[in-house]
Amino acid sequence: MASERNGERRGGERGGGRDGEWARHWTYPGVPGLDLLRARYVRHSFARHSHEGFVLGAVRRGIEDVVMPEGTIRARPGTVVMINPEVPHSAHAGAPEGWSYATLYPSSALVAGIAAEETTLRGTPGFSETIVEDEDTARLVRAVHRAAEEGNALAADSLLRVAVARLLRRHGQTLPDRAPRAAGARTASLARELLQERMAEPPSLEQLARELGTSPFALLRAFKATYGMPPHTWLTNARVRAARRLLEAGTAPAAAAVAVGFTDQPHLNRHFTRVVGVPPGAYQRERARTYKTGDGARP
Image (cartoon, rainbow, N blue to C red; front, side, top):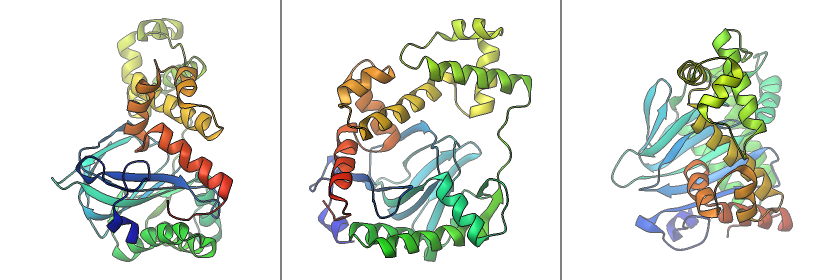
């Protein structure tokens, strides 16, 4: 892509960042229910986190190592990474030169609508595999970005639907019910609700366990078994999600940091960047630009 040759940097601004790193995380009004990330990372790594919607990623150059619950997968050019909602994962460079890629984050509702129209899947749709060799669909993922950046809503929406429908038909499945059944899972669910309610001033692990009538280590084991990460990691991820919503509503990053329980803006910056891929200020500027102008033109 032309803008890749020009070398955008972290936050979507032109010019090179450290080691030539750059990133743009944005929404395109022409395709509701979709976030987009296009980036080149070298030293950057993503902390363990999960998403409310889906992740569809296509590496263009280099190698991305994605650490999933079942092990590490190596995303190379010609592959498509598919991560279902709420599946914990982290990522880092798998080669000295890092990796550049295009990622789509379609909402669960958007994917469910495509599945209902184009597949025989019933219940909650998702993917049975995490990575597949599929150069044609990888090109479609990158083409969605290109169309959105050119402000071509018809092409962006069409290409997205073709890509998602193709992946669902080839690799789709009905996801299992997430309702907790075992006693440990029910305890973990209650702990999550309490942490969500007291996000800004959470209890200690010992206090949380005492309130739930269990022991700290039993709670740790139950929470990790249920959500794939310990309570403190889950809380950081939840705080970043809440900060995103505040930033999208126009809250200043410093105020958003305090509201969700981070010590200050640098504390938010560090965790936000390791989960979202860009700093909170850049994230907010992109959304203000797209919401105010309504265009998907390149920065």
